[in-house]
Length: 240
Ligand code: GLP
Image (cartoon, rainbow, N blue to C red; front, side, top):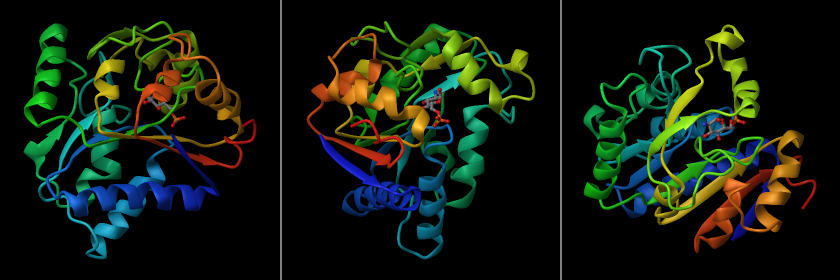
């Protein structure tokens, strides 16, 4: 596991460089993308790199980690909206190469199975970016999720509802359920970047990277992956 520590700007630049490098070595890369505040700076820089002619998404395929359930797809707090707003609307990606979980599927089981099948059909994810929940979740894999899990329905924990309700107009609008790639799905990516920022993540970063590998801290499973880069700002790295 490699660890990069820097100020916020350096972290965003390092993350964006990793994506640009991946795409230039394989233009038809399959990228696993995340939402939340943590990767926003990476997407901003990737848009800059695209505008400067340094990277093209023309052949790239993407899969997003997760999505809330029970809101319309165009809801401003949906992860679908986030991805178009922060990245897809500003680069040359082809719409049919974008894979997002639906927040209002006809069948949740089918949505999960189709998503897994689509990842396999593309040959698997080359590079996956992950943020970190305050309880150690990756995607929406909450503590206790089996390491063998594939894409599935999740009942969100109080900790996650509390952490993410800031993205909704009022806390009661925050969905209580979500769909997420499973831990096995994430672990099958060729390369993973785990990114965390801020003092609020310092404790859980220490547990995830240096504590026991346990389903109680979902991100601790990354200790078992052979190709992980951890990108931390100084506050998130403070307890290492
Ligand atoms: C959500 C997402 C996670 C993300 C986490 C951290 O719960 N499902 O994938 O990593 O938020 O969010 P933030 O980056 O805003 O701290």
